[in-house]
Image (cartoon, rainbow, N blue to C red):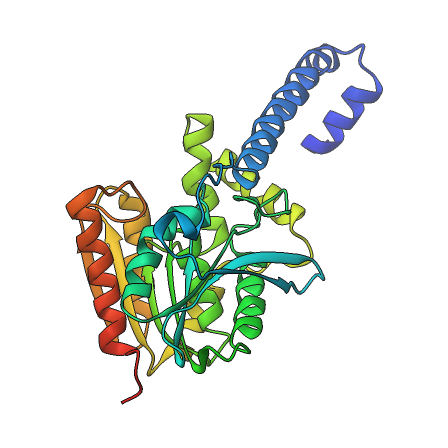
Length: 316
């Protein structure tokens, strides 16, 4: 009798010693499985519904009083709203993409520096963040299409040079920036601060932070739960890595942060897989954390200077 037949027989005829033992073990096994699935489900939900930060300021708080609130349609026929901050007519348009657990208002100091240098800007809240009407984040899957929709809408405005689009993004926003750039030839210059390789790899960074334990089982179950929630639009794995060759000829700056070593490794991998031209800037602190005073200003000036060299306000 093979082991499977023996187990089935023990279940059918529990009066045997083995059957009685199995009767005691099965409920325990089922309980453990339910607990594990429960914790994994809890982690998945917490990650895709991050705590939202209130937006207590808008561009007018930084003397950017000529900003406009613009709406655009997403690929799933929902309306999203963002801030369009004009500067020099005919200048490039830069899309600023906030990070995970952040919102657009936290990018206004950077936006102010860009505008002072003549760039037009657009900022909006990603799904599950800020004032977005969407309850859940898809960690870059649907957000990529949202950014592409925003690009297509904003480049129609007469104030901007529709052929010269730049994107800056951090963490979640960095992944979205790279992903969108591989799908739009309008994007000429990209600056990404600590992008992750895929939504799944980011889940495996966040899961131990929520559960307090880093195990293969929890990481993979959380990842599975995320994919089930996002069916049928799941695209993960090495999709972004495989798409990076399409960025050949477009200027790219990758920024890493020593304080986030796991993200740093993933960013370095993306950098290594990216074609030329590309540059790497390794920092002790970046926008994935909080930057203060001189450090913040130096960071913002470095980013803007890269755009000034690679995507100047006035056509050459």
